[in-house]
Amino acid sequence: MQSEGKSVNVIHQQHLTLGERASDMIATKIGSWGFIFGFTLVLVFWIILNAFVLISKPFDPYPFILLNLVLSCIAAIQAPIIMMSQNRQEAKDSLRIESDYLVDQQSIVILKQLENEIALIKKEQKIIRELLEKNHEQIK
Image (cartoon, rainbow, N blue to C red):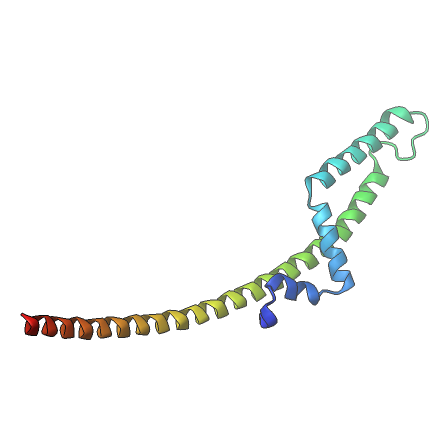
């Protein structure tokens, strides 16, 4: 799967559609602390505005039914976006696992070749050592 020496990340990124890239970007943003803090500030602002500032004529009086509707709509949109992003991450992980498996198989073949070569070198060293010992005995 890792043809042409490309990494799994590059291969995965090349096959994403515009919508998939957008959902990944959105999932990254809504899954951040910045989003949580920012969204908390918006909620606090909404509640303060409707409960205290616009006390005579709030556009969303307590119990903030409009706010609940907005939050429900956001959750209904966020959930599928996050799920799409997680599904793509799972597909990317599968590519990575397949790539790791292929690399492991290649490593096993290389290690077996090295093992055979080392065994051959040891055998040749033994023969050379025996010849040197014979020559050394003949010289004495």
